[in-house]
Amino acid sequence: LAKTTQPISMDSYEGQEVNITCSHNNIATNDYITWYQQFPSQGPRFIIQGYKTKVTNEVASLFIPADRKSSTLSLPRVSLSDTAVYYCLVGTGYSSASKIIFGSGTRLSIRP
Amino acid sequence: EAGVVQSPRYKIIEKKQPVAFWCNPISGHNTLYWYRQNLGQGPELLIRYENEEAVDDSQLPKDRFSAERLKGVDSTLKIQPAELGDSAVYLCASSPGTVDRDTQYFGPGTRLTVL
Image (cartoon, rainbow over all chains, first blue to last red):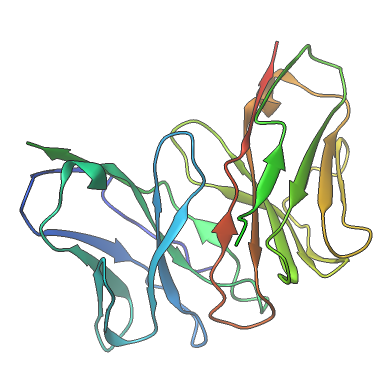
């Protein structure tokens, strides 16, 4: 099973770039890597998804090396409102080797 | 477009009582998920439906938990009887269909407290 490992917590300051790395050594060939953001008392919200190399959208970038055993979520110029828990998810459940497993996430705290 | 709707938002019951949670997914979404999230942990998948068929219920404690999605739209998750350890947030999510890169849209969850 493609379990993920992330730092438990990270701190940063407003205006900084934040990079959160996720390790997924057993990623399956067909697995995509998806990142979610969760605020207190809300369900997780999709941020970005990728398969390899680099993906960028209006809120984040996702870097995936060639071996796909890790990925890095990059948040440019964070603000206080980016304080949340970030989950790296590998697996979609659409094959027996691709179970949906959320890890414990990374609790990101942004300070003024 | 309306998001995933869940009710109730909060529920407090005594142990051994039954409880049910309801979820209405985003219109047109074929895949529906139920998760349980304990405090400080990530969501744990309980069951996944493709239309009305449960295609992954390997993590559902079947002795006390049951779920249904009779017409392939809304769904109900039931616990009977509830135990103290069932206190958690129960999340429902939906996604458009059977595509490997499907992304999930989550509802706000139901916070269950078992006394």
